Image (tube, rainbow, N blue to C red; front, side, top):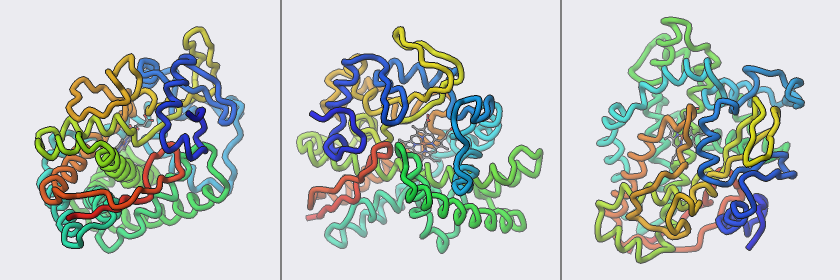
Length: 401
Ligand code: HEM
């Protein structure tokens, strides 16, 4: 077993045994390499996500100097401007104002209406895979489905969609631990290009509104000045990126887990009514987003240890999802698991706004694959992406018999 080391390929191959060791060691541990306090237990992660003494940012209350931190390098500014105005990196009252506007588009009822469209698209993508006798599940199904859905919701014309994935990937590089200068340079370039693109799209929609989300954001902005132009751009980018990254990974991580558990896959193939619990279990079993950070805005105490204002806490979602205090036989994949309070969609005020949509997309691709590709088989062992926070595979080669 390897120690907690997010840069070690052996750890990345299977981080769960190391998490068990971390949990056994205690409820909070200082990790020098990232200057963070690791929190591995479910009860603590769940409570801290709801704790208002922590924040995704501190800039609504403190300066960088107050917090003993340095301002980001000026050459990284385009990334930070984009990132810091999205709701995920805002705290109340800005967070509340933007989330309220956006959440209307993501209520379970609104999203329910997208179901037939998502199912049809998933069916077409799987039919293509079947016609070709197989291919890469990632590029053929897992990726195009959520990208098309979120682009459609925002009203991004089909001809403009090709750069969305690379822009998103380059920006998301910054969410890994200690990103390199090269990663930052790529993220900055993508932030500039993506922002420029959206600024133009917003100008077009302003002239000619549609029934898409970008037009909705403009309308909200124009009605009561409730969204600045930068907030509109940042919100659109956040929705486009968050709207597909984790869903892509959840799909391929999930199918890879199924291929490694043939008895469970056979049970699922025999009974498609297991799809809803299977999706929740696969998201718990191999958690697509492994770690989320919070700044400590006011001192907190965890199990007798004071974590001071200005410190950073790293909540280990993958560990919380394998905590035996909450999940029976946590390292066992059980597609029928009913009592499954996994934390993969977070909790508290930043709880994933796209969770109902993600669930519909995951169910649509799984159902289409079960129904239309019943002989789907793993063709080659996949390569794992060298990332820790956003856990995924480089691809997933499959054949259809
Ligand atoms: C399997 C797929 C997905 C997973 C695992 C996931 C996970 C998460 C998590 C863990 C957070 C909160 C992070 C934190 O607390 O710091 C979050 C927030 C968010 N997610 Fe998702 N997500 C998924 C799909 C989606 C989709 C399809 C959308 C579509 C719009 C989306 C949009 C968002 C947004 C906008 C936020 C920020 C919410 C806020 O700050 O209030 N996500 N997601």
